[in-house]
Image (tube, rainbow, N blue to C red):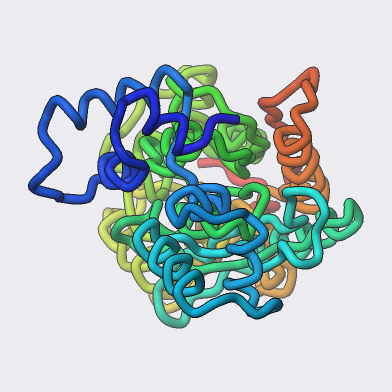
Length: 385
């Protein structure tokens, strides 16, 4: 693996100059020619900025052992040498590996996972279960999960900090977006990761996911069997796999889409209830007889709203959800939903990540599993006009 000193030597600049270029520091003395030379050198060596104890030793012109003595305060070192080492570490923004004292190999046996911000008062027990099962799977393989928060702005910064301080061997990603900045960033840095969920098809990375398209289509087919044809859809996106499952089912059944019955809302109880208000205000013959929701949280919000206006869930209007929220079985009526194999998914995402960390080629890096329809009271009544 290339080091910063090699980049500097190829570009015929000082090690600190090479660092300033690659860290995008604004230094007046660095000309465009110098900057390009360093960038070309790093590209030719396939080097991505990752400051190590070797770089600090080279900058301070001392041995690696001396740097270790100073930073760990383990062996007396002369004051001038100590000062030189500390100045070099500060100049290169070096953050020591906090596990280096205990590890013989350059691995931490830690996996990074980011907590994502959720609206106040909202919980996601499905993801909580996933994180717990992921931690169990990691521990069974001799790893532990290090959680951290991911801010809305500069979302890749926390990942960079953990990698440059050598605190994790890789990451599990979740809550992926269509154009998720973390994915190309981690690929460019050469950092192992695996994801629970998919992004776009333009970037290849290891992931495990539930077939949301299949899940929603299964809900629709269940409602068709109960005699429903006027079915609305409630989701947080109008372009994701779940809404496409809704469209697929309508097309297969020969039912024309009604654009007004495809409603976008946030994944909260209150907003989901408010979002279906216009549908329920329609005359009885014109309103949908069933609503398919992209999550149980939405479905519960809709059920609460329907009860407030005197409509009977499962009789006057059928409701289905997605996720098999722990509450869904204990509602009245209980909620028909889609169950994800959370334990299995958690194990698979850890398997994928460990293969990336250990550079093992697996036969399948893109795993999509069909979920299971759980029929309960919110949709089980037979309906016919």
